[in-house]
Image (cartoon, rainbow, N blue to C red):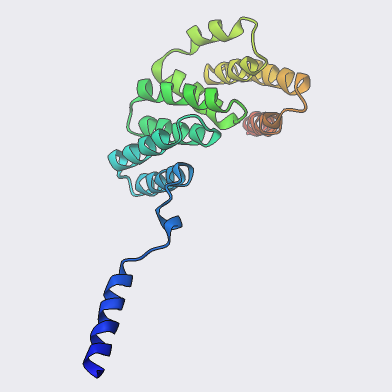
Length: 189
């Protein structure tokens, strides 16, 4: 009787050992995308660029059309810029802006990318045409990247005055202040 009890206990423990609650098998693409993005950032910090690129691409594929995707595209673009591929980075930054157009960092990265590709004069012409108020952000940054800092600041200030309620306006104002402080510090030397 004792042997049967022990055998039954072992059998029950073996059968139930593989049991998991059904909710542990739920795949959450959004959460997994965020994890892959975090892994990409870790690889980037370790200078494992290929692995970082792959993780950002996985994150994008898991969340192709969400606001979080803009962050993943931006991170991928920054990685491409780090390894010297601004032509690949441009598409990433443009997609980041398309996904979420109210992050000032994306515009800054795209302007730096245009400078690295030697496209600033051409892009100034494109963004000078009337269009979205957000084009003024890009235009101001392009003038700054082109060395015409005062003109860039004026355009960014015009944007901040015309769109005071947008989320991005706070970042634009902070950047204007930073640029003005930079100008003042170089004049005081």
